[in-house]
Length: 518
Image 1 (spheres, one colour):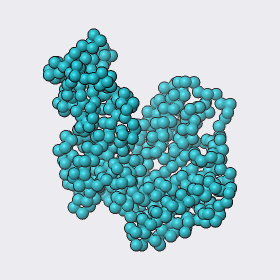
Image 2 (tube, helix red, strand yellow):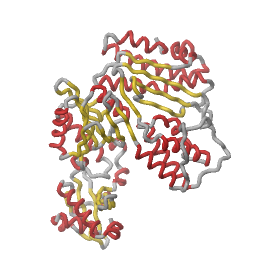
Image 3 (cartoon, helix red, strand yellow):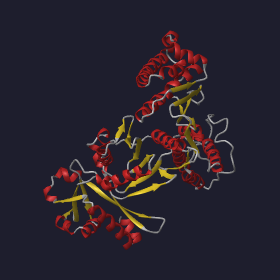
Image 4 (spheres, helix red, strand yellow):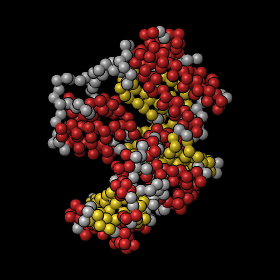
């Protein structure tokens, strides 16, 4: 704030006044006399950080949040962790919306955390110029201002959750869930950020990520009613209707043929610009994201300097986010480059250049998802044996319901080095198949029971080992034996659940387990 006031003068002060006024209007603070606090309470008081941001539109904006780092000493992660909707849940809900032709709305709840009441005693401390500005917005605070170390100081108790406090996200989550449950919505136990309610005989689904919501139902008037209900509790929301939306960083478009196109062009462009900030050029067009020697590591390649090493790490991290959501065609290359971020070399820099060159020439390429049948799931799993420089294997897996993929995975195998391609195949299956089990369970609680789920693998010996289990496992395959028993337990429970839920499941599921324990 001090630097902002120096740079932007009165405009910065007005921005801070506006931000403090909004907090006071929502009754976020309760002033406390310094003399009424214990030494321990004053010591644990959080600093109120006020930031100034200059926006591209030319306006200056103020933002206030608490510095919650002190809370880490006495609040564990278990007490502060808040659920967040999974990517797989978002993708599956988009497919259902598209196939059923639901009306979809995305909405943003302004100042979401501020609607949650604090359930503990938390203090924030203001000093110097921020005390004067805060007192301008609320004259009643003037009598609580005291002197500490020769500076004016003001202690405020938080009545509501403020951004920056470690438990604010969890308090907001509980507040939002309480409102949904009060209105008849039920959470999906396999993703606590997805809630459903049957309205007029059809399902209404809400997915949310902190303060961003996606609401869908076949009837647009039902969506209107749900939005109005939420606005009564949380105030006016920024709502987007129609076929084009932006949700959790993804731009998506519903097509007329029951599919969804997902784009993340801005992220890709930012990565290309970050690369070229080093005065290096991405270059011409590339037909593929990586060459055949992707996994080859040259031990003699020169390490990157600190600047380029940091940029390499930044771009790879950003593209990892993109690859999981919109550009699954680059997932293999990114999964390899992720293993190089701590020891990146000139060779890795060239591999990144190749990837960015490919993305630059295919920047308009969307990810397309959909389903030909919502009760049939296909899973493919494969593995590459000893492909990495440390001789670890690599697992690849895909799930689909007929159009595009619901989920995908491309990662280095974590288990110690295998002795054959057969072992790599079994480990790859063990690594990926749990996602199939999860999706099956998630769909069941969304009201969609799978009639069949097919599993595909291309190694005959691995399939026989998986099928015969203990009969084919000796001392040299003890680790595979352990994985097989875990696998068997998971699928037995999964099969039992499907058997109870649907009488015609058994025949279809027999096909599914043709390569699994019978």
